[in-house]
Image 1 (cartoon, rainbow, N blue to C red):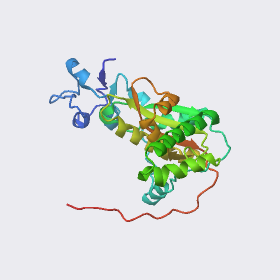
Image 2: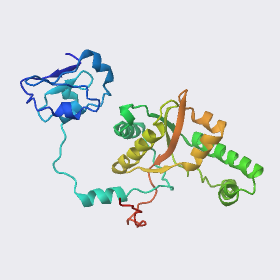
Image 3: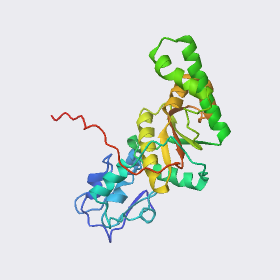
Image 4: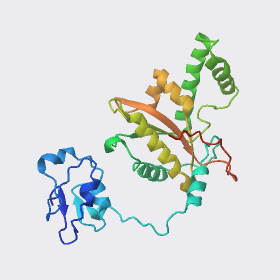
Length: 274
C-alpha cells in the first residue's frame, strides 16, 4: 500500500477529498484519481479528513486505513434538547464519595479525550494521572505552604486577605480546600515549545469532563493547585511532569457523593452583533 491509496472501483472522482484537505496536498487531474505527490507528503497534518469525508469509502492513508476508521452512526441522532440538557448537567464536583476510580475507567476516559482537536493536529497533549490519598494530600499541602508564604510576605494584598488566609485557616482546621479529597488528579501538559499548548490542553480537559458524565464521574478544575504549579517549584516537582513540559491545568476526578436534580440558571450571554 502506498502512502495514499484510492480504490478506483469505489472512487467517484467527485473531488471531495481534494476540497477538504486542510493543507491542499491532494490533487486530481481531470479524468484522474486523487493523489499526493511524494514531495508533498511531508506537509500532511495527519488529520484523516480525506478518509473521513469520502462518502464512498474509497480513500485510505497508510496510518489511517479506512478499515480502522469506524463509519459514523447518525441514527438515532441526538436532538437539540437532549444535547442542551447534557451540556447543562455538567457540574463542578467538590464533594466526592469513597468509591475508587479504577484504572480501566480512567484509561477509557482519556482514550476518548484524545480525540479533542489540537492546533494543526499536533496531538502534543500529555496526561499525568496522580492517584492515592497520600500523594494528593501532599499536593494540597504544598499549595497551602505556598499560600502561607504569600500571606507572610504580602499580608496586605487582596489575594492574601480575601482568599489565601481563609484557605490556610480551613486547612489547619482539617479541611482540604485545594483538592477536596478527590481520589484522582489528572494534569494536562504540553511541551514548552508548543505555541498552542494552553488551548490544546484546555479543549482536551473540557472534552474529558464531558466524557466523564456518562461514566458517572465528576470533575472539577483545580485552579488553586494550578496557581501553585505556576509559582511553586515544589508543587511542580511533586506532580512530576515529563521533562520540558508545561502544566496547563490540573483536574480533579472522582465519583460524586451527591446527585444533582436541577439545572441552575446562568446570566444571559453577552453578545455584540456586528
